[in-house]
Image (cartoon, one colour):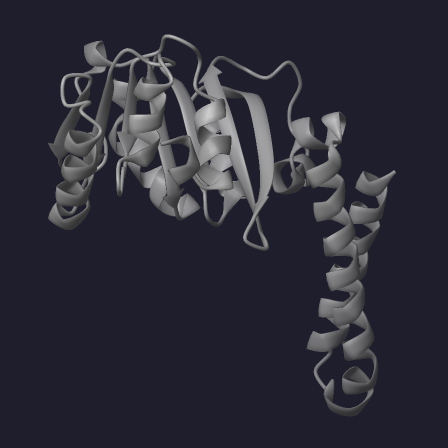
Length: 234
């Protein structure tokens, strides 16, 4: 079953503490839940989804893996089907960041003393901000490159940060910047190249059509972004 996990899924699973009871919200095929119990990392997983199609697929995969006794399937929206006493960790992966924030806000009674593992597909800055807003601190972050795309995952626990995050840290991660790492450095280099290419393409266009100054403003924003990435690359 390990081979069924994508690089992104393995990254998410690696953040789950040993022995934790997990709720996998939006479980899709159920592969992460199956891996967690097969590898004996978790004694019990609740796999949920809001749609019947993924639930049917997950149920078949779980039955085929003979893990029906250790994985419980639930159909429902977000955290509405989770009893807080049944889990230690909430895993939400593969959704937009704003949707993840909505799920957390609607389930405050469930998440209040839990470890959260979140892997948003977008708006990760807003997810970091939301975690601080609702009383969580960021314990770990991971990054991976899967099929040509970078993915970030966050582990958060109840509590306050020792010092406030800057806007740059919300956007590009405090912990990954401090830790460095091969994949994060590759991400920064790719972003430097990408922003540099956009700036180059704006040079001629700006001189011809920028009568209202919008392109000049965009160029200034990109130049500031480039400085930030170069600072992270050091």
